[in-house]
Length: 602
Image (tube, rainbow, N blue to C red):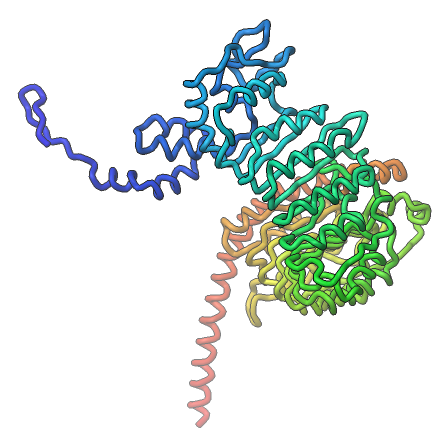
């Protein structure tokens, strides 16, 4: 197209190719998915074609309900100006500063239909008056308010009534519900009515996450919870606090035809409940129990877990098993359980056993170990049954004392499990007084036998600083290295200041060949104990907290030194490559010389 600019004529080229590309909605959606919310808001003002895609992504997920309510009418308190900052806290609960009208609701529905995931969080939001939700209920011209909502989370501050308030956004198409019950003086009061309302509003739920304060015991509402679960025939995933999977509840869950996963979370994020509720653990299973179950999390002693899997009706086709024991278990019981699992669950890909609990470390016999007395021992014979699980790729094992494995023992274990991608062997035992028998050489052994290893956690004796690394190939000067490692967790492995440089150098020599991949590897350290366990430990051993802090500072310094070690390794690798090239040339010359000597002798 030609345009006249003063006395000159210029040709303006239409950006045809680029315009066509940026007009394809699928491509726009893909590109915009990598942008942040602020950029989405800017893109929505570029042109009409971009507006719909950008607004869909901008409103797809809301972490709080205030922006949604603000569309209807300005928010404020009786004595304040309209809310300008949604994060601003008000002493008085916020209300609508004016009545809503048809135009407000039309505008509201133009945005609400874009919301797919909503978090109604009374903990993070400004105080909201119940009058707001009452007005919405009375004046909404049509339901559901969020017709395309698929995931709903409700978090309360101190009133169970807030849970029911959050349900005004619920409808039959919601597939996932997250509930965070409040801390209150009367646990479970009003929860029975809440569960009934959930059943009516969201009968097709597929995923439920439930978290409660630590003081809440599931036994107080067990019959109601069982009835609620039975009315969820499409339930696929249930995630509860640690001590909620009682015998009665697991019996109920075994009857659900679509249930795929049962698991639990640890406090403080999910609460705990009472360990008394899960002991003893003896659910009543009927033929056809757990027809679709693939992942199972149980809080039960190892002895009770063994009895559960000895039942011919037990779910033996599971691919993931997570066991947390609320009481101390003998080492012989643990070995027998692993033998049983290796026979009955041949499809297991992930096995996690956490045998550390508040009850375990509060045990009188265990408390005596702080004076140096040894209790149960976990050895190679205890763990060797896991090698009979052909599909196993993830194995996690937590125990109160270091596992009695030598470098040779670990090599025997991992040499039979080349498919391993994650291995965690008690990297943070409670009893840190006893040194580990594993050395840094164990890392080289795992790198050699498990090329797919992504995450490794070991408790090691780092004072032995002359490990013999595996060579990449006979005659090579290069050590074998991890190829896919993402994190190495050293837990509370003991470390001396004078050894830190040598340790960082050795760790750097094991990281992937690619400099970029090596820099992305995380060195993790510290403890993974839940707060209740940490409290008991530090109460019994006054130096434990100080020791852990010192170790964490030293390993943090190792993590900071590692990039320097990687750079040094790169320079060393260049030097080694030069030496290998010279070595090959010398071999060639020697071969020629030997041939000449042989010809001359003839």
